[in-house]
Length: 244
Image (cartoon, rainbow, N blue to C red; front, side):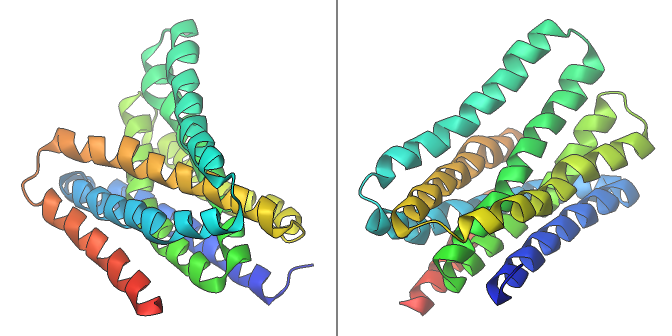
């Protein structure tokens, strides 16, 4: 069913799943250390995600589809509206601490992680290089994503055991699930449609980096977080230049 590229895509999503699970178990075992350093992981991941999107993924999608800017905007606001709906309307309907502090973020992260799996399929369909760039950026933010999911669930009143399993289901397993469902369909689409999907995924990546990771980093007010952000940008730039 899956070609060689398909196996690579599935493997990449499984690695992302594993990295997320490592983040969950690290914060469970070393909670003080994880809480103290998660901001640096988030800052570095934001630098890579945003830079890779603007320097490679977006230009590639624009070259494949002249309507790509519209899909870029749609991808950005789609995630915004999903998060806005989950955090505003559902929380308003169910007024309880565990729901608002635990389940709502878990659902939001679960949707995002599922989209991550689709992004892997789209990126590797374009080229192995595009896929590798996407994997680097995405996997770098999987570790802190697992940590954040676990902490939010635990602070929402769930037991450590339930927080662990819910975080694994929402933040980890949803990624390879998204890949398994999407890859057989994405492998059959034409270049124009592929460019549109790639642009949608780029919008999602920019949203994650600029609207979730960076604001969270700024709230922590860690002096060296700017350095980790710049290192992430530099890593992305070096990778893209080395391909040119």
